[in-house]
Amino acid sequence: MQGLLITTDVKVKIVEPKDGKRFTLEELQGFVGGRVDIQTLPDFSVIYVNDDGKNIGLPKNAIATEIWKAAYPIEKYPHNNDQLIVGDVLILSEEAEAEENREEDMGPCEGH
View: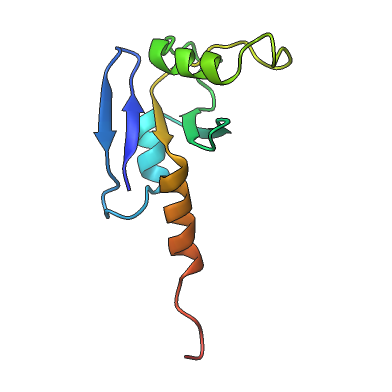
């Protein structure tokens, strides 16, 4: 599994979980710099952001904001949409999320 880390200094980097399989909560918190909030994009990709980012004054993430604006244009989604993403973010594709969920569902069966 790989994720796309997009930072406020306009850098984009492919990142992988330490165990090579799935990101831990601690890893996600490290990428976003605090408590994690999860937002789903229309293509079912998932964007992880800092839940307190706007309240604590994190800088605008220009790339992530443009991705959000393209996914949720204000004309179509006017409510609860300030079209501003702040702080560093991690995006996982639908395939990566599905892969992670498949691995969770395929855990060992008890009694076998």
